Length: 124
Image 1 (cartoon, rainbow, N blue to C red):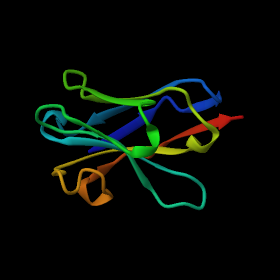
Image 2: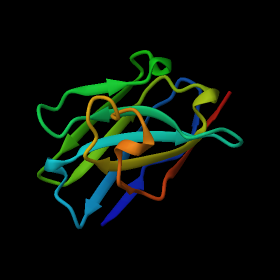
Image 3: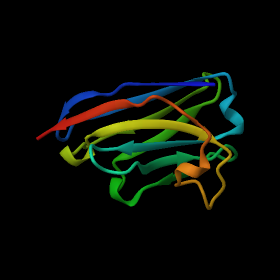
Image 4: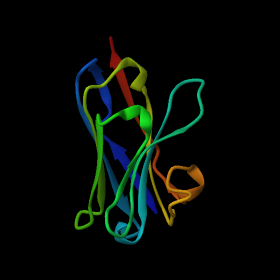
């Protein structure tokens, strides 16, 4: 199973990026998909997730409506739209898939397969 994240880069504060995560080796329709991020010197933290069935979405409190997660099962790809970026959003963003349930949807334990990450840098 491979998850290839892309779309990161350098952007000014207030700007936008769209991250993609192309999955091979598994059909994502049966999996929950999560996005996490890790800033230098900090632990990996939950950003957003979308359930396998029903497509319900979950978000970390800090993003306050600035981010949006989506999935395209036909393309076996998931997306994370990042808007109104702030310098504190600078981090490596990781996508992951797994059989997460409600109690684990926002935890690394809820996911089995991880991508290599894509770096997002927001300048002030």
